[in-house]
Every structure is written in structure tokens, then in C-alpha cells.
Image (tube, rainbow, N blue to C red; front, side, top):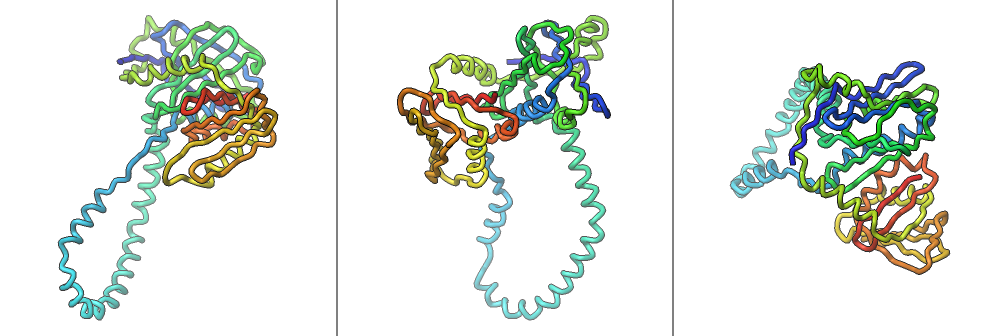
Length: 351
């Protein structure tokens, strides 16, 4: 499925001593959608939008190692005559020591001469990572201006995680002109780095830039065209998420420190073989218990009491994606987990 986007420039963040101004460049080929306001809780927004970024770039698909060099080396070893090598070993050992000393000196001089090259190469790699890494953002996030709230939506690179950041208008000191609608916004690695400069002692202005719609008919040549061959699975993912949200679910409230303990277990240990499930043991009026397979490590959540009517055991997968919640732990009051059932999707809502 082919989609064409047009952005009037790039999304920018201007950071000064007293003011931070965020201006998102919307897709001008859609219906005019714009918004402007002054953030009142800029720190919460910074952490939330940074967590959204972690989802945008997340890719937990298996990446096999490149064994080409090893296979070439192994093929060469099979061609060697090891008996002849063993016979020559005594003579080789006698000549090896002086050659090793000479080689050590050559390596030292080589390293000194190549040092400027390696330093320049490292600088270039750092520059390329900062300025040429937009390929990581294959699909720009979607922003919706609603009469009650402003929210961002995105999928991860591996299309296994969906995130939605809802921003209530109550966190804005001032809300200016806005027009409801949904549009794509230009997003890049540099934008994420600029988000980290948001501070509480600075005034933060947030806007979805409306100027692109005003000049669309007179300066078409100034627009940056983006053509994306959107996979059917990405479109289908939005429909599946919407359908899953309508299914009956078991709700569990987790304290942020209990979520921290879950992430702590995942950070400390890495599974090398299956099963890789995570079992929720829920008993009415008792703390939630979560067991990690295959180690059978049990985490008791003393701050999180299950308020349901009947005991249940629900097994879910994809637990490594819980690490995407780490940045929300310090600012969240609670996490509400919606478990649709064993083997089905689960939703984690930070409040």
C-alpha cells in the first residue's frame, strides 16, 4: 500500500535559556490539523514522549549472527596437513620468539601511525549516527487533535508493540487555536535528542504547525515529499489493536515499584532457551504473583492487590517489551494491566 506524505520543512525544537519551542511539521496532504499551547507539566511530557520514542525504534526480532568469516576460516583449516605441521613445529618454535618480538615492535609503530585515522573514523561514525539515522523511523507517528485531548500513536519497527500517548489539555497552562483531526508528523533522531533538553524552569511551547496549510497552494516546491510503501501488516495492526481493545479483559493494577521489580528481573537475566512466558497468578484479595519462565523466578507484588472475583492464571509472552515502560516508572502513579487471556495481547496503561 503506497502512501505519499508532504511536510512543510522538518519538525523542530528550539531551546533557549528560558524558552523551549516545539513545532511539529504535519502532513499537509491531509485535512488541516493544528494545535498550539503552553505546557504546564513539561517534565512529564518529556519522559512520556521519550518512552514513545523507545517504542518507535524498538525491534526485538531475532537477528542471526554473520558467520561468513568463520565458515571461510573453517574451510581453510580442513585443507591443512596437520601431520606436516606437527613435524615442523619444533623448528618453528625456535624461530618464533625473535619474530614475535620484532612483530610486537611493528604493531606498536603501526598503531601510532594509524591513531589519527581511527580517531577520524570514529568521529565520522558518530556524525553519521547523529545525522543519518532517520532510516530507523520508517513510519512517522500519527498525532490526533481531539476536543478532549491530544494523542500520539505509533508502532515499533518490528510491528509487535503499539503505543499511544494521551495528553490531556489540563497539563497545558494555555491552549491556543486548534483544529481537530489526525495527521502524520515528521519525526527524526535529532528531534528525540532535543526533547531531552526540556526543563521545568523553561517555558515550553508546543504546536502542530499550521503554516504549512496556509502556503500549500502557493509554494508547493518547498514541500519535502516522503513516499512510503506501507505494509499491509502495519495497517492491519491498527485494526487488530482496535478490535482487541473491545474484548473482555482481566484488569490488574500494579504499583510502579512492582513494575520496576519486573524490569529488574529481565535486566539481570537473559533466557537462552524456551519457554519464555510470564505467568500471572491472581487470587482475590492477595498480592499479584508473577512467575518468569524458564527459571520459575517468582516476583511477589506486595503493593498490588488483585481485586477480582475469581482466581486466575494467565500466561503471556513478549515480556522483553516491558522494558519499554522503564522511563515511565518514576512519573507514573500506577500501571493498569489489561490481560485478554493466555496467549492473547496485553495492554499496560500508565497513569
